[in-house]
Length: 71
Image (cartoon, rainbow, N blue to C red):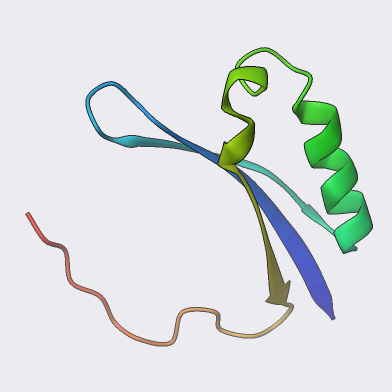
């Protein structure tokens, strides 16, 4: 089963990112509807390009590699 993760990302004045997890939706259509609703809300109106919709398979590892943190 595929679900759709909706996030909003925008750059802060200090160069860092502010990431908001909006929700997880059962179809691309409902994910797009959520984005359409939120684009009308304060903050999102000024940063409409920050929305991202990503498909994920349920019950699967989506990050299979390790990681390292760079200073």
